[in-house]
Length: 209
Figure 1 (tube, rainbow, N blue to C red):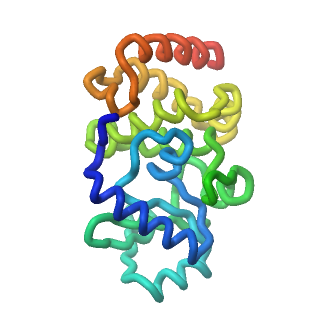
Figure 2: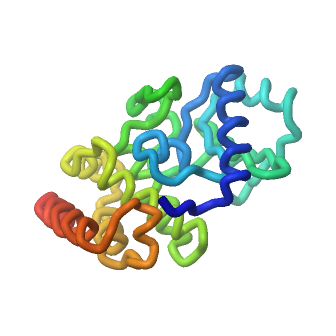
């Protein structure tokens, strides 16, 4: 399968993520959460939701920067970054407090959002940066979640409706329809298998609208 990011970087990030998971409590979001569901593309950076007590522990271990514009804390390491989101401060498609309280799941020893909530977060991120390299990775993760995880379209609709995000259903359709076929290797698909999945899920999404 074609690799999106450099393998040395993703391996360093994965080892760092495992260390974090042994030492602190967090909800893993972003590309690594998508990877745990899909086993497709590994992530370069680590994205986590923590409480303020855990933030204090991280301040004792790392040099943290505060990104006021994006409402998150950041750790800049040599090969990867750690982005840290907090209840009551960070602004995500679904409030961080609801991710922690209502949409948590466990997979392979990690706490992650349920696939429908993770999809909402990924669509929220993609909506701001589709034309960028990270936006392309978002599109790969979004279609990976759609095709390979146990995501339920009707459950996704309920989540998006609850948070006033129904426009994301149209965004999801546009990502399916506009996906560059030259990037199918990132999804481990060929033209024929992608066409079948595209038709199936496009029909499901349209029925849910």
